[in-house]
Image (cartoon, rainbow, N blue to C red; front, side):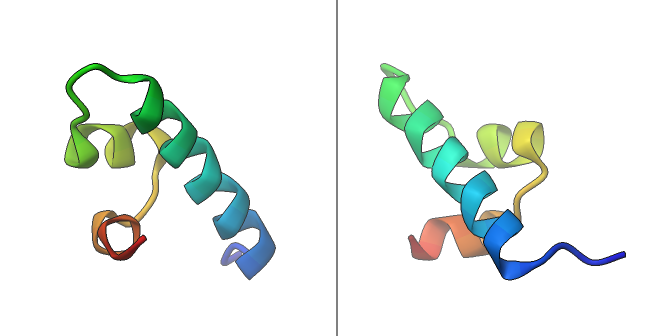
Length: 44
């Protein structure tokens, strides 16, 4: 079953929080770890 927009937003926020804690952020790797679409994350 597809995820709801609210679930996706929660995941994206978790990824953004994780990226902000990294000294050298890697968007692609972190997106894979959280199972978030890399393109959607880059637009944020």
